[in-house]
Image (cartoon, rainbow, N blue to C red; front, side, top):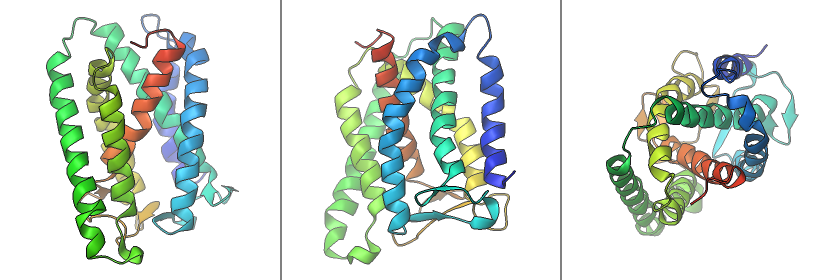
Length: 235
């Protein structure tokens, strides 16, 4: 199995077996989860394919199985199944085991943090920097990730479930830093997933591009929203 494949498998195996825990019974939510993953995943695969084609990011072949969907390795396709699965699992685990947690303050701080930071990135790197950069050195990843984060925050921050989502997103940062750290080269000679320095701002958390925080948010927030719609919890 490829190195990227092992990362995906090891990320998935724990949440999968714990899905049958009696208190959470996550397997009973699969009928809502998998359609949600499909809807969101199609959009992200299109985004991923396009950015791979234009060289915003790419993949190191020696860590891959060599099976591709378009320009995307099969492991990358599975990424958009496993990560959403794991994060909705965490979302429901927190609600099941800590039902009395008050998330109003978390919701307020979180929405302002995400909203203002994404707005500043869009204004500076999408507007001001446009006058000082050529298209070959434009921050496509920064702008797209921050722009969608801003839009999603404006649309969702008043939803009743947004506070629970914010808490789960923060908890998800723990496996996020581990998995993305491995994928971006924290323990390998070369990164499994590389990013062109021409299209990111260059800030990194260890080996992880700063933009990945917003990309992860862009993936998980609409997923949680659609998931709640399907199970009749959208307010």
